[in-house]
Length: 159
Ligand code: CO
Image (cartoon, rainbow, N blue to C red; front, side, top):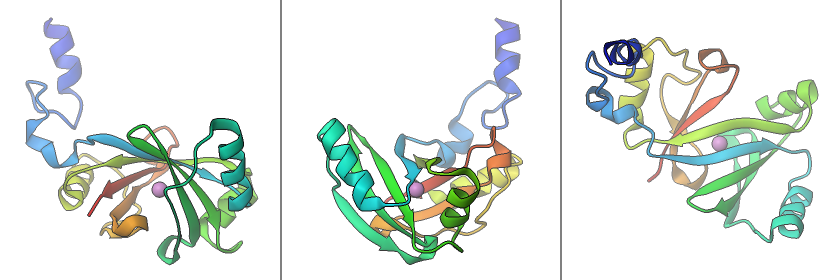
């Protein structure tokens, strides 16, 4: 038992007793979405409809991220299809380098300012020190892939 407790205590996101309460702001309460970078949004949306019978709840241009995005509801989360607005955008460069595919996953948090503070203290590398405005009027921020197994993570605080 002791060993197990110690193992958890090493996590920067829990306190010495393994309790997450001290960083409540950072606790993700849902996987808000999983994002897939695509070259042709219309085609990708059509494909999802054909294959899974699901259609987007919304489609919107998000200038701050250089994408047009479609949010397809799957249970309590979304698949977010993102098409770059141009080749010189981050997602444009991603597709250029690595092709279409999984781009990031997004955790819903209740207080993004608190979450960013906690993550910085825990040694995370933040792409965004301050939240910016994403789709659906949400406040969002990205955590650098080098923080966690090469995976880009987005935090989302819904309005
Ligand atoms: Co996203």
